[in-house]
Image 1 (spheres, rainbow, N blue to C red):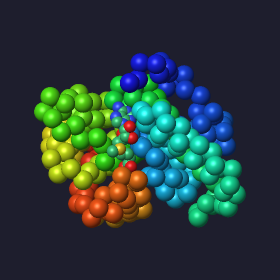
Image 2 (image 1 turned 45 degrees about the vertical axis):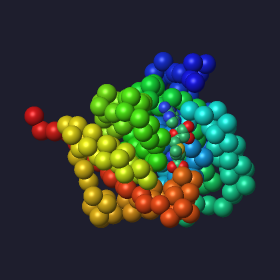
Image 3 (image 1 turned 90 degrees about the horizontal axis):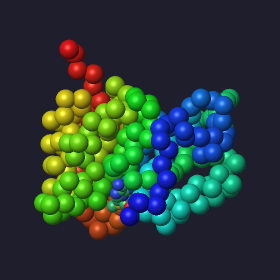
Image 4 (image 1 turned 90 degrees about the vertical axis):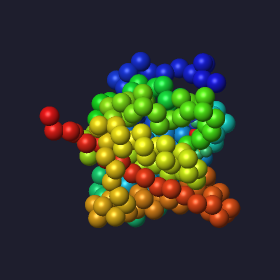
Length: 229
Ligand code: SAM
């Protein structure tokens, strides 16, 4: 349950320097958001690859979000090594990744300014199998407008699941929404987003569990478009 959580009234009220002290004063805000990040595998994999990009996980479970917070603190404390692609003004060592405990289905626009995200991840979301529970799914017609609001035109929604019915559901809703269009993995690789796709495919704890059980996975990506009037 999320009744006892406190949320910022608007993104103006979020003090990102608490989350990313090494970027304080840079004016940067998160560009990648991992919705229902679980144990944090995706962002931990991506952080060193895009050291200039701020990344935020959102996770509703208290113990899990605490685990990720501790995991990031430990990584920051122990990784003095520079990132693989160091740049003069980039602090290394996981300074660009953080987490909030939040119900992402209700409060995304409280954290992210309009058009501030370039990537939004929904990786192995809870399937909510029963029909009466479909409105609890994280991809739903009403929520798509919010996702389109926080994503900038050109930004990408990445989805992956091991539940075929949910894969079809997400694809049907996202591709029917006027502000999203399906984009295939090869096109994204051609744009240099291969490392992101690889991490989406294989770096999350849930994805690794599916691999161990030799399960199938369905990946679909969607671009936030600006339809011509
Ligand atoms: N993405 C991770 C992965 O691939 O390993 C975790 C997948 S897990 C099956 C789904 C996660 O979404 C759980 O950790 C759950 O607590 C979280 N979650 C479910 N609803 C949420 C919500 N409304 N806001 C934030 N997190 C949510």
